[in-house]
Image (cartoon, rainbow, N blue to C red; front, side, top):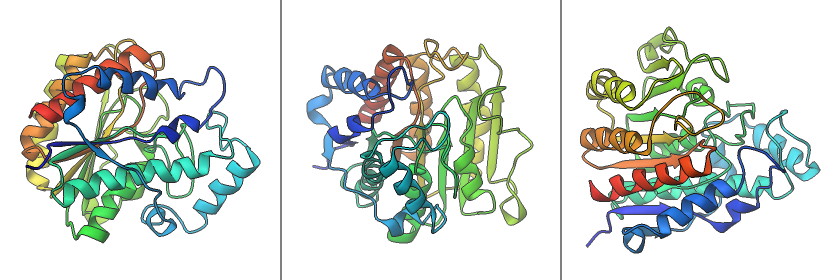
Length: 309
């Protein structure tokens, strides 16, 4: 019998040392892992072993000189931006982060599991083709979308980004690509300042980018309404073969970096709505979430819904 839900995680993710008091810290994964290990479903998750992404795979979404640029900064331990700090190990860990998402995508594509959650760091959705920012080194979810097309013959792929910050890097990568649908629901105004509803894609890809900026204070009901009334009809019209989730949990009401009011139950509802559309076939990858209580309970709720669909 095929195990239903895959779980990709590697302890080396904890070795990406961002320094004291940095929001994107290893404890985010420790707390989330502990919550999952204490859940009723832990023993039934299918373990997926992350392996490093190849340079060729990174280039599915990034410019040819970009991996070496990241590598040199990590070797010198020079921050990529004011908020994106790295240590020597960060380059290899970033490859392993991307690889965890790719192996989760592979498990779903081959039918080894029905859906999968990759609990990885560093996150990815702010990384553009040639620029690291917002704690992100390589754009894990964008590379996974291209991987499914390049290595599994997928046609249309959809990416749903519910991180509280706009997934500007993912949008940039696919802005002129009609084969990838990108949806982002995010607080506005907030970092990085992109994601206006007027940003819809360009050329033949016009309409395959869909942004829904939300005001501070938006919570479970407002998010569920957007998913029901806006996202799901758009997905039905696009008809993707695979749906990927940039699963940031920083829209949680306890998160220190935002002002939205989503609860763990709200994230479970969003998960259900996507699973109903996809008939359970989803690849989800961790992005943000900086309250330890918020991220741990939200990851637990998200993975339980993946498993119990």
